[in-house]
Length: 264
Image (cartoon, rainbow, N blue to C red; front, top):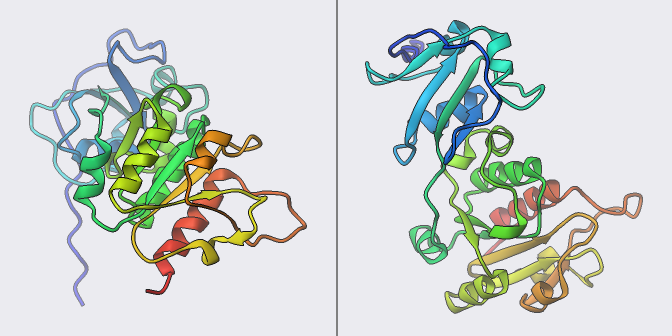
C-alpha cells in the first residue's frame, strides 16, 4: 500500500521579528495562541481573523497545509518566542496573534448539532480545566460547552493549548445567567443532570433517552444551590471510596464517555 502523501508545510511571507522582545500580552482585542495543535487549528478555522504568526523555522516545518502567500510570518528564535507567551509556556516554536472568536448563541449551537450533549460549567475558573473539557467535548461530539461570562476564564493561549485544537471546533457559549440557560435547554428538550458526589443515583441510573446537559460544578465548592435546583436530577460517578473526588475535567470526560456509550 502506498504511503499517503504528506501535505506541504505551511509557508508564508517571512519577516524579521521587530525588536526581538515582547511583553507576553496581546494587543487590545487580540489573543495569543501557542503550540502546534492550537495554532494549526486556529489557522485552519475560517472564523478566525489572524494578525501575525511568529515562528521558528522548525515550528513552520511542523505544520501541515498551505497559508496564503501574503500571510504575515515573522521568524524568531526560541528565546524571543518565550517572551511573547506566559512563563514556561510550551509554544513549540509557534505563536499566533489573532482576534478572539465571536460570541456564540446557545440555541444556535444546539440546533446545529441536534441530539448531542451539552456541558454546562458552574464557576469552573481554571483555564487548564476548561481547555481539557473542551478537548473531551470535541472527542465525544458535544454540541457546546456553556459557562457564565463573569465566572470563567477568558479565551487565552492557556485554554487553547489545553484544548489541543478543540477551541476552534467546539462552540464555547458564554451567558450572563446560567440558570436561565438551563431553562432554555429544558425548553429545547434537554434533560439536565447535575454532577454531585453526594447524589444517591449514579450517572448511568439518571440518564434517560434524548439529549442531555451535564452540569459540572467547581472543584471543592461543587454546584451552587441555585444551579443544582435547576437540574432535573443529581448524579455521581461510581468511584472508589479510596479517593474523595476527581478533577472536574476528568469527571467531565468520564461523563461524556458514559453518554456516548449509553444504550437507547
